[in-house]
Length: 179
Image 1 (cartoon, rainbow, N blue to C red):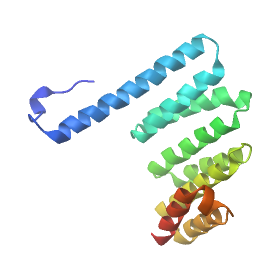
Image 2 (image 1 turned 180 degrees about the vertical axis):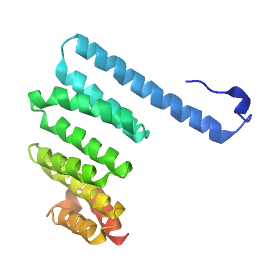
Image 3 (image 1 turned 90 degrees about the horizontal axis):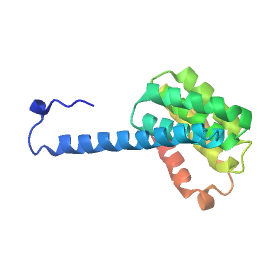
Image 4 (image 1 turned 90 degrees about the vertical axis):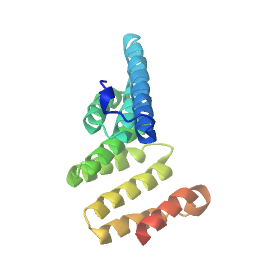
């Protein structure tokens, strides 16, 4: 990371905040990278893949979509033979988010639907399905296919215990419908 100090304005809080965020990003990704390498060296494929997924999510959250995609695909390659469906769900959900952010909506829907399939193979099925149906709705919203988006949000609202077990998701879905 090279910063041209002559371009910095002294006491600029925006620059300070940006540099802090950038340092945090590099610290997290660096820690995950180091942990992943250690697990890989120990032959622990599962934990190596988990670190790749964590790194990928951090990269995606920081808008490093290429890095996030690469790390996610590497994690999938390790997780598929292990049949770790919960983490495979996380991988495909992350790819769906990446492609939605890139405006590649067909790929986003493809990956979110794959995530939905993996969610149904986990013990956290309901919560993961809610998240994925919401994410699919967001993709449709971004495509300005509002009827399809509302259908997905309403499908998620059909879960009987939503308001008790997942009030945050109920609020999110209702907010998305109102939008």
